[in-house]
Length: 464
Image 1 (tube, rainbow, N blue to C red):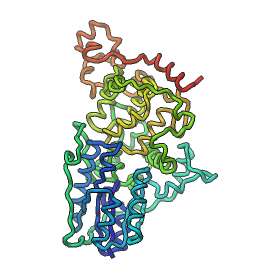
Image 2: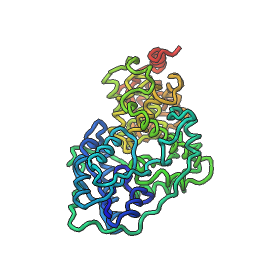
Image 3: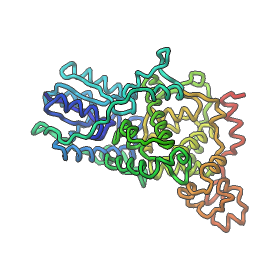
Image 4: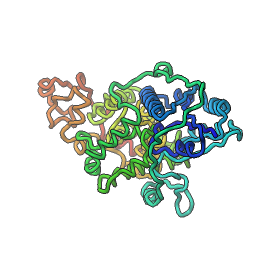
């Protein structure tokens, strides 16, 4: 028997249920990845994330070669390419890891229909910590829309065993066209980040090793601190499946830090659970009362200032410049910049969502959408708008009190005294001259007054 393994967001050889199932059931296994213009050039097109993907694919091919196989590449819609490849090699089955987004699920159905029963289409777990997110239900049988009860049910779910990487793979059919791994420019995209993390399974496993050895014990207390970073930075690798969330969870030790990190894995599964059940969330607010009722600002100049890290609020600007530099942003900063865009500037959360998806290496539709709706107070797990309306200066005082994070990404503020680092516009003129940071020239003045913006936001949401 011959089987195809359709790789998508599961770019690894360790703990890969679809790959293991193919090996257990077929004598010949053909690993394949499809470059789909609908994915690469769609509304979430991203040069930085696609470059990361290319690095992941190159390393996956190397790992498969070491085991006697290789990665076959096809260019075109999977509904055309996979049935053609299945017919060419006489495949009896196509194995794939289940995904939850509307586009991913549509592609699954299209491929299954295009196969027309000529080969079995088998869907496996592997992208989430819990295998059957769709099976997690309330007592009434409904999907969860509030995180805390979901987390209780999620924690009680059984877990499958973690699978090792295969030592050897069967040789693919002789003479089968391999396909070519394109360069980013061949796909019509460009790298917009100057210092992104490297892609691939080896980098993922090394990142996890370092997190478990050096960081996880202090994660609960330190994960919100911007300056002294106490986070995993595993999110890009989890997004592309360079390491499985099930293995990450399995390897977490006991302790407060590990418990806090496990909760983050739960949030990831929660947002996937929500998007899987409510695909309309991809484009509209979960809370129907806010669909078309909030009068969002369309102030393009203010949006551009936010994108470029020129708002005049250091913690906001540092987060946005970190995003541009690294294709990643600290989670506390993501909440802060999201609050600033939607509450202080009153700009539609979808604008921020698209900008993040353009640059984020970990740009995951479910998590990104869920977090943007959360901070915009229009999504699941609702709270009154005022509870997620952050004062950027107070947030900086709390989570970057020494200005370490701000100075790392805003070099123009490097010599600003600590007394003024959260609100540099309050520096006397002589201090500005002395430290070489004149507000309005070397660093912008605030583009809005937070107190006034807060009052306008509460009115916008009709909060009494």
